[in-house]
Image (cartoon, rainbow over all chains, first blue to last red; front, side, top):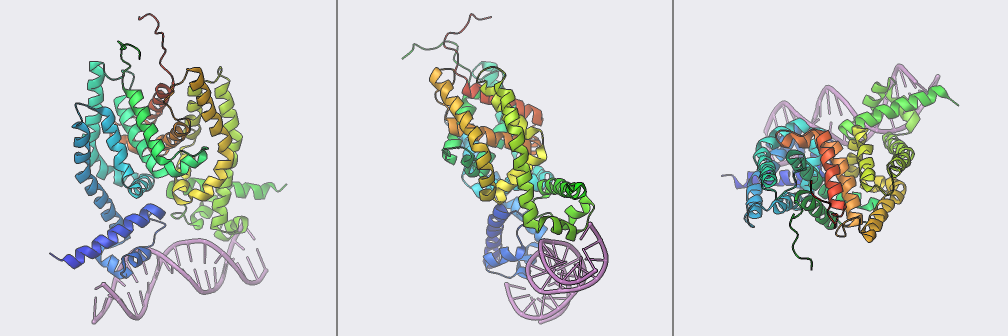
Length: 208
Length: 208
DNA sequence: CCTACCGATCGGTAGG
DNA sequence: CCTACCGATCGGTAGG
């Protein structure tokens, strides 16, 4: 309806996400966001009411983005043939990897406003995490997955670890020498998750 | 030498760590730290020069604390018989678990000032992470550890994941239902790390 | 969407 | 270790 206004709102939200992710909400003045978006501070306040309103709008934007992306990503993973759990794990990991700034924003929000973020995310993610935990249980019942894995704890651990690798990996890597790349860390996460989940084959095939 | 002054400095540092961890540096006024320590703001500035000086002193305190604790923790783990790698992993994890506020502070610093923190931590931690990576290599050469593990990436991953579980686990858990406790997540991290590292026994014992 | 203005709070200093 | 004070910046409003 109003192309011009939507344009400005989008520009503000884009710069807000970028700056909130980089410096945190408390460390970012709405003045600096307005300047980055090419407008004045009162204009930003006109569009979002207040700094808190802008923060909420940023969160809603992120969650909406996930609502659109997650089903597609997980469907792609599932379509690779049956309950390919390591493809699901890979999907979770790649999801954060696609936009490291978003991963950092989420980590910051989990530290700053865990309850508010929790309410928005829980509604969106619970169906998917249930799916993953249930798939693990099914695999355990059929013997294809290790029986000693805790489905819920494993699911949470993978989410936390994928977040940490993307949001902190570049810096955590420098604590080790030679520093592994974020790609290498992500690959190792996938390997670790796969090995920790797949049951060793009882009847081993002939050795090569 | 000056008991009274050290007392005040300690009180300031204690409250600064607590508030920086909870709200971030940008989200914490030195006024609020001074009030929590029972002094006025100019007194805090007298002791630490500036807010930036206080932040640096907080980081130094944390790193010094680790310098004292880490060798003991890792020696305890190593003394449990040979190169018990899962005990080392457990030590890393428990290290953060002991004080979740510190884990949150570290995550915040990795987001806010990765270079400054990196310089302080690298010096302290590189010897230990080298030790861990080298122990993995030795285990791989002897066949007791999986050859497909990447020693440096694995080490970094464990550090990141242990941090994430302690700093974010309480909130990440609520994205799954039923929410796993932080203890359960930590136990799962240890299980995952162990399975992903230990080579399966080639000659399986008689089945039970 | 802007200019002009507001009170509150910020980190820091002077001076004792 | 305090009282008194500083300029700068903060988020937000008035009015157009």
